[in-house]
Image (cartoon, rainbow, N blue to C red; front, side):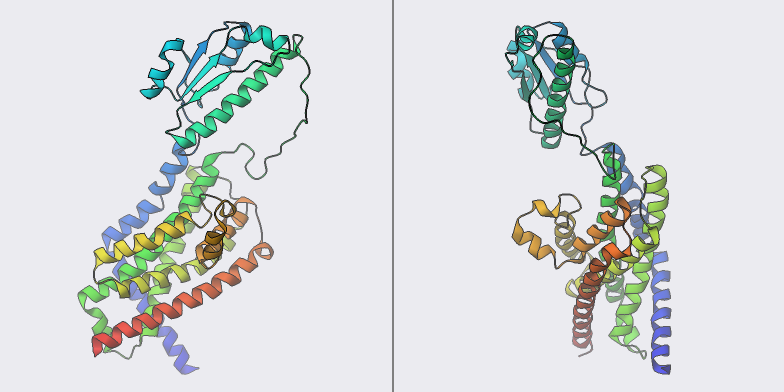
Length: 379
């Protein structure tokens, strides 16, 4: 019991040394502050995935009340004010990138519609901006249908056949992108900084030669690794809590439905894995630039394939099976369940258990690799 207590005190004091070393590293502190503030605010507030100020031109060959109603119904700020355009300039304007959408309303459109002939409207879309093109085309189609249906109720248009859908949007009724992007970018920042901070901490020790000095003390690789994990993990957990409270919930005004302590507990558990990965990479790299390159190779896949940008179910089945072995996938599930849907521990405990197993595995790998590196240096 005394031996274990002494080991815990040693790990605690080594962790305090790590925090003191990080406090003197102004570049890393600036990166942490920038990552949990600006890197989250800019994507969430600028509408990277939503349609904003889409350039629209209209070829109105009908010049009827219905065609004018459709043109004036395009809402701002999703679309700019539509510009009239002659038919012979459509291809040139699209080739030049002047307009993202060109709506061609054919002659006798209103008359054919009221006669029940189902006329067609052509919408030309510049799909070089794929996200804007897909969303904007859907908006335009919905607007045309709604305006035509409303106009038809005052005329003699035939009743529409089919099924009327009653759609309820849960957890984000207005489909505000900032509610989704802010938390998902926060997770990306956690992936990046947790691996870099722990890896850079060990790399600093190696470059300064202080690892050898530590080994002259009654310390082992286990104490050194544990100290770096808890110290760097604590920094990121505190940064996540502050960022969620001040940036996500405060500046961006995103409602956080679930328990913040539960999410921070999941974050601490997830950082157990990420910091172990950072230490493992630091034992492989021979310099700080190499560590940065290795971090890119690791962070990019777990960021893009964990389901925080594209739903995991939309990915090929082999990728889904592989990503099930990464803690980032289960961390994203916990974040979405807790922060978006207000889920409690009873709904996410399986993900907690899986992250514990994955974290233990990566910790053992990092510890074994560090012991091998130390043995090679001593030998």
